[in-house]
Amino acid sequence: MAVNATPGFDLQPSAERVALPSNYITNFDFLNQYLPDTYEKEFERYGNRTVASFLRMVGAEMPSNSDMIKWAEQGRLHSKYTDCAITAGATTAAGTITVSDVLNPVGSNIAVRVGQTIFISDNAAGSTNSNKAIVTAVPTANTITVAFYEAVLTVPVGAGQVSIMIYGSEFAKGTSGMVDSLEANDVFFDNKPIIIKDTYEVSGSDMAQIGWVEISTENGGSGYLWYMKSEHETRLRFEDYLETAMIEAVPAEAASGAADYLQSVGAGLGTANGSGSEGVFHVVGTRGNVWGGGNPTTLAGFDSIIQRLDKQGAIEENVLFVNRQFSFDIDDMLAAQNSYGAGGTSYGLFDNDEEMALNLGFTGFRRGYDFYKSDWKYLNDASMRGDTVGGGINGLLVPAGSTSVYDQILGKNAKRPFLHVRYRASETEDRRYKTWITGSAGGARTSSLDAMQVNFLSERACCTLGANNFFLFQDA
Image 1 (cartoon, rainbow, N blue to C red):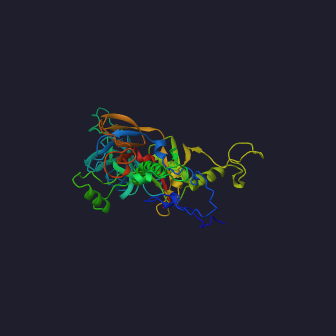
Image 2: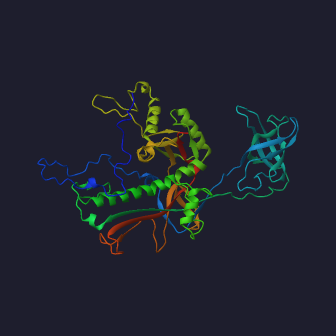
Image 3: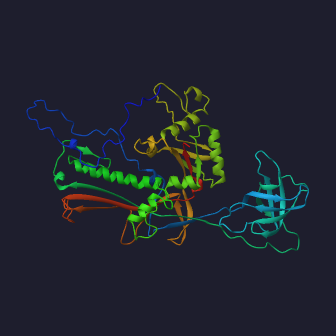
């Protein structure tokens, strides 16, 4: 058995580009003695239709006054290279190690110095072979010569066969200290704000028309003037786009159609104009962690996620924003840990009785880290991500708390939430959320246009700090 596809659900229930004739009485047949009974108030069949709330829960908003936002994130404290080759005989006392890892910044020297001791491990799956050595020379930017502590070399010889990590140093008595020093290696990221606009227009004549149904919207608007409903819904739709644009935005690739179009309509405004932005999904999918091919439905699946988080920032508390199916999968996984879980009779620790509603859900769990689960309406709404077949997103793991970064505007380190929005603003212009009325109706006196135009504008970007601590859960 399954949910039938027909009847289904409307994906475009009310948004139209023109005033609907059904909004007003059009039947003036006074010969009809059976006038219909009408409900005065429209029925809110879709409940709260807005999807914005995610960034309000996990982030913050702060001003910026530039076309570009840049920040620095800490690099690793210790160094490890995983693509290395050894040139040495099996019983030789010394050898040469060549590092082929891509260095950041590109072209820099490897962070290995004479006198340091290194651990060399075999890259082959399941292998337990390893050796230890002391660095005797650094002849080039990516090669070192070493003297092994063991008499027999157990790790393999060849390109990409071994990994090396530094675990300490050793010097003979009466020798000089460490040669050369290491500089901190920060990683720099940037993002740019995009301009988001919307508008609503109604003619002065239509503003004088009273509808026959009392309308209401999620922001508390009500009355019998139908154009007010459309204006309120335009505002709510724009506020949703302020969030969804920050989640879904992607940078326009060079020579792409979007880049060419935006540059053409914004001619003369500089190369920074109209080149997209880096939304949360794009950033996490590019430099974060991705779980593909469905949802983790077992503890073994979450164990692999936890092990990846161990290799990243190891943030203690995390929030899972998930769609309904992913939420059910987590509930079923946790319920299976209960001795009665297979029968579905007992979830958690409570006394069952016939008058109690059975709670079959969980709000979170702890396994190595704390995970809190929250339903994300954006991933469930059928008119948004909730009915997506290709490129489906099932959830997003967001670390809780804040991180310290160097803010170039402030010129010092500052605490910032992992996710936050920067909007353009100065002492004379605040572009966080602008709205203004033009025309000659509705109180406006700005032009001869016999209409009221309500304009909306915002210029903003979402900064995803420490993307390596995020997890994106997608279908493929």
